[in-house]
Image (cartoon, rainbow, N blue to C red; front, side):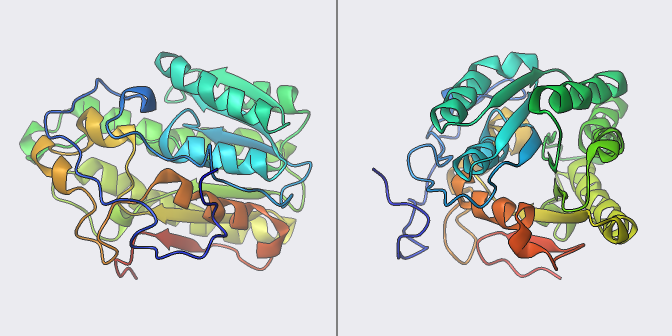
Length: 299
């Protein structure tokens, strides 16, 4: 059994400082199954303590990377989970469904492209039906494609990134709200890119700043109804997003090494942040952005 998240350990050495091969490439959106090195999503180490007992969560982009780690941590904390993912990610999604079920919780698989408004809304309806209700929503799915020059950033890519990262969040949240009662929690995934945009990620960084503002405004609107909205802002985490054109290939071997901790994060290190914001123990935390980025200063 791997050391769990409660084990006293040096954070600089909890996981190795990886050097992904530069020639590594996957077609978008990428699969954990093919990633080199593989990610740690907490499948062998995350230890739950019942912090989300009886809760019902919908997580987008839940087949791999950060979303998969959140799905595993929620299930280990005794929540039932609906997983949204693209049909081409079925292989990864099946693995997460199996882990959730082996944790004794219900898993509802929801393949579909949420950048389509009708499919995004239909996905929420199926999640509510499959789970018997909804009290946690995690908008996590994201599109990130590196592009060095604005002149080369196509209208199609800009539009797809906006629809996946911002429009889908709007459609899904709006559809989910009628089913969420006081005590429910909405958690949106933003990024350090919202504060420190890389020059090759103009469209992606723009969406992450939009997610921050959407979340902080919505948090104020929904707080009187007892529904909390917060965000998590990851730094450099090793996921399939990075090798499916999310990073320039020549930067892969050094990915995450410039952080004060000296390494990229592993998805399982994000699980506790989402669990905290989803659970009642964060009842007075509203409109907050929880930065999990290896020590990089942010506003």
